[in-house]
Image (cartoon, rainbow, N blue to C red; front, side, top):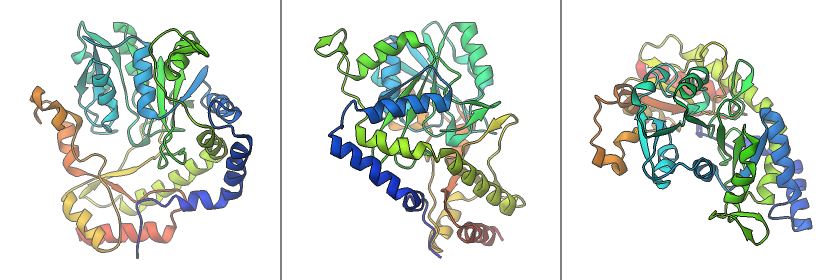
Length: 367
């Protein structure tokens, strides 16, 4: 049996007529930039998250860079980030002229270890960027307590966790600001690149919008040096349709995760994802910790099952940070995880038959 890692057609085909209609309206109205579709999506997404303001932009990386600029974080500053994430989390800090300070991750959730953050705070620290990795919320209460104590900004990286919650409250609504990516494979994905900035301080909205639009507060009135980072009308139209189905897709992700849990829970050679009490995991990815990870990956591939590694090298060990001479002793959990984590095929619409086949092959490998 062939099992793709993801199949977006199963998500799009049932709503194709709605998507086609929304896209056609944008084309017919030539509403490509700063259109009604963009404004409506910003309003609808803000309502979904129960936040003050959503400012759309070109992509999730831009969202974080714009937030850092809005908070005047740059040369000489330090920002705390987790040791495992996609490169954007630390990259945006470096491109702003600041220094990313890595903190090891929790062995339970793989998110930043909230108990180790305070040991990395210094006189130059200006912010913390917790990542809700793979869809599991970071420990926001503890992180916000530490930030308040040290007067730091908190910027949530929500790129992998659309719809995740802590105590019934959506992620993205805890920090001073948050970034979202709508890359096509995300829980809420566009048909190309798109992103959004969430603000829980409306005083920043004018500045953030200006930064994303060439520093303009009105046409031809540039109050600062900004950039061109705008969500186009086509992407907003697609996201507006898909937002209505997000909760339904999240439920299907949870059901698929439950199936994997049930079938794989007795295997001693793998560790399954956890869901901390009072949190709601968005299951952007289903990531296991596997003994002989490379052998398992090869075995699955030979039997038609596609798997991926998110991520094969922890951030401190990337070549761009080689000068810092970080070692596995500095980040023991991240160091272990980079050798063992494996993402299984996982997407709404994946058939029970295919999921059971994946589980059967994993069992076969370890038997």
